Image 1 (cartoon, rainbow, N blue to C red):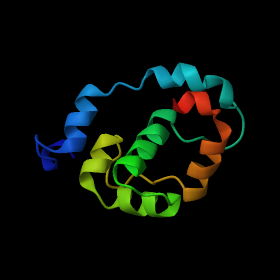
Image 2: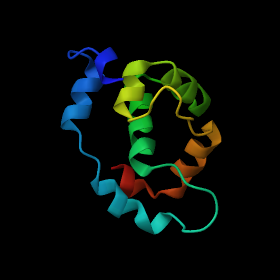
Image 3: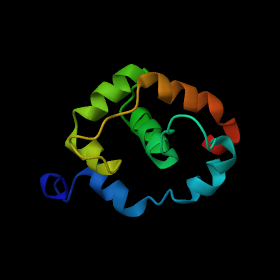
Length: 103
């Protein structure tokens, strides 16, 4: 994937400077240990950022849009064959986190 996204691409440059690893610790209390696997918090917040930057307000459209763009796939560390979360998973996860986490 890295070879297909140009060096000057915005999402490549953003990925090189944006470190969201702190989100794992910050969001840990909101994730359970049983049930289905949850969306990775870093992927979730990167998708939210893409939605903001691309002016996409629909979670369904965000998933459709992101799944068709190589640069966004590269940004969120997905491969072409990785399955995207359901749009409803994005909505439920957004409701799960308190507002101060988004700040």
